Image (cartoon, rainbow, N blue to C red; front, side, top):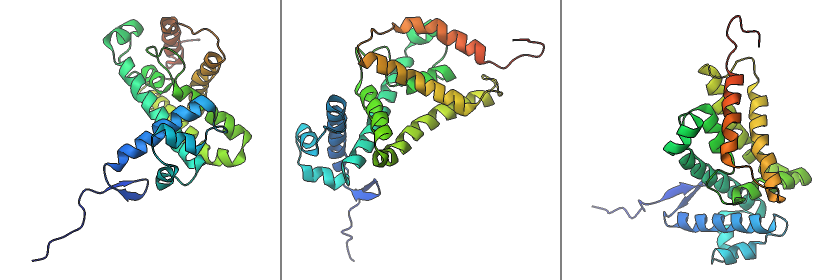
Length: 228
């Protein structure tokens, strides 16, 4: 009887077969890339410095990523997903739901979970910095735009999905454009992040509550006979 020597603990990551322990190395690189790009910007971030932050070699980066652009793309996705997890956790706190008056699965709460910052953050987040850096780089460099546009489009599609479901469930008037609302709701945190990063004072999260409540009322389907 022959004994199989094929490895049974292989995982497929980015289209390549990897050992599970390699996932830890990839995450270290991504965290280092996020921190370096957030601190220094895309143009000034160097692979050698990212490798040093991760206590790894530049060769280790090329084991995972073809070039700096693909690393930046992956770092942006990693930063946004991580911040979304933090935001979702923040918004599920009972006191937050009580203040706003909505459950965590309300469409406005879900939209808020996609923003690159929440009330527990004490200052600008790496997700804010790297998202704004991605938009700036994509605007100035055609090659970078090709790499980064899919990530921004993916983020925008998350907004569109939430809004479309809210329309389907009768929480938003179906005369409103999903694409327009998604862009507006994505533009708001981008604009607020820009102001924060140039040193403008933050607005306390509690001041958003009445605005959120009025937005909810304004977007609801118009009842028959309602002349709004």
